[in-house]
Image (cartoon, rainbow, N blue to C red; front, top):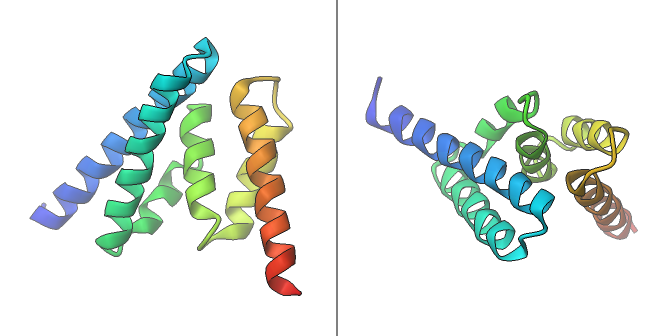
Length: 119
């Protein structure tokens, strides 16, 4: 395995861990920890994007963890919107949870943004 592949895998692993932490913090109502975890998610995605590997999050769209799927879908909206929207719609149609609420908001905002952009 080359150094770049190892680096990408390490970043994806950090992304997954942070997304799981984000989901747990939301469940507990711990906004500080949720914000901290969200910052790590954003940073990891930006690093992947800088390496030309933002699409690495697509492999997480089917993750068993709801928060990982949600985070990956939000990040994938900009380059794989159909697939990402489908995942977010699945989260929205699932059981009530803080992540479901976040998915509803994200999907609504994305669709507003798309509508404004197309006008």
